[in-house]
Length: 194
Image 1 (cartoon, one colour):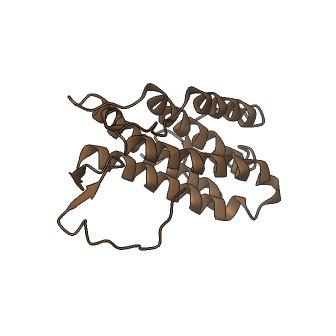
Image 2 (cartoon, rainbow, N blue to C red; image 1 turned 60 degrees about the vertical axis):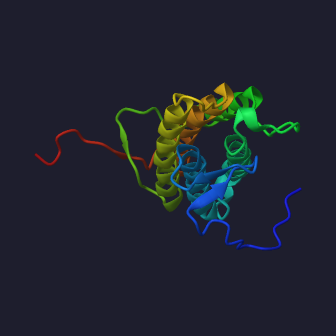
């Protein structure tokens, strides 16, 4: 259980922050960037949920998004505990079962959507716009995780990488779902403004 009874500690005033292992790293460290970007994606999903929570037609999607938000905290916990720093206790890790669940949710939502005949411009409903923003932030997080995984001395779990890759797909499908199941999508018209 997490207990936060003091919000500021002053320990980061020197430009460092602590990993879950207690190791201090610069705030611009690639691992910190990676899980900070996951937190940013989670916040964008929270903005979308302000809208999906109000829409009775999106109750099922809202529950899925809440589940994803919890998974993203798991992912942040995973990333803040490098594999070699377990310290005797079992760190929280993203599991393949979480990836599998996300794939099932993608398929479940996608089968209700109108067929896609063009690329979709971000927008439509407020929820859709926020989910597209979360999708692009997730793509940036994925790039950071891949870079981190390729850095000597660093590791990222295979399931964590898969989860982030699937998450951007889920968010794309979810954004379309909030646009009247794709009917209100704004489609790209190639060369329209030439």
